[in-house]
Length: 161
Image 1 (spheres, rainbow, N blue to C red):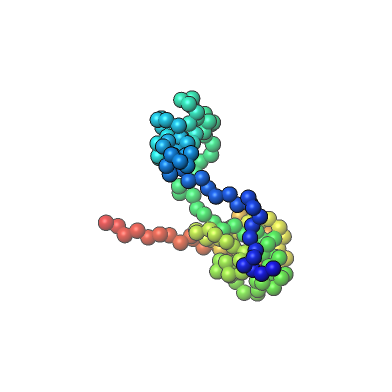
Image 2: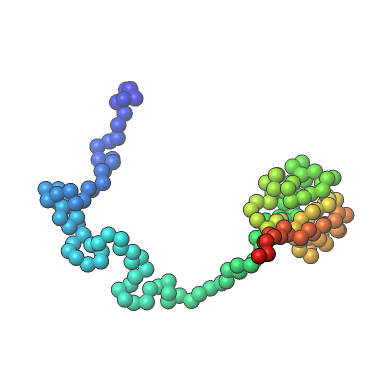
């Protein structure tokens, strides 16, 4: 057997039906769309339509709220920082800044900075320089002998007209 002998089994791949290609094809004239009506035309978009009944997505109650002024932080737990320190990915003797957390892959996303959360336990004495931190995270870092410096998030300056 050679590479040029390899092919699919008969009937394994079925070609698509080419509609509207003449009366002899059996799918000519109306191209299997029936006669007239919205569905026979191009550009039909009636995904949620239920025959005049109120669509399901409009019957269900609205939930939640998307705050347009909310900040988007990359969240980092102190327990994960301890894991990274144990694995020698982060040096606890130097300042642990947002750049260090992003380079090591611990903080991902978060266009407004990094926020330190208090889940887990921190044993290493370290100084953190982050945009935000919870009270529990600050307490846990200080308990381990370290400190947390909370910097202001980078403000977008707009030129006054």
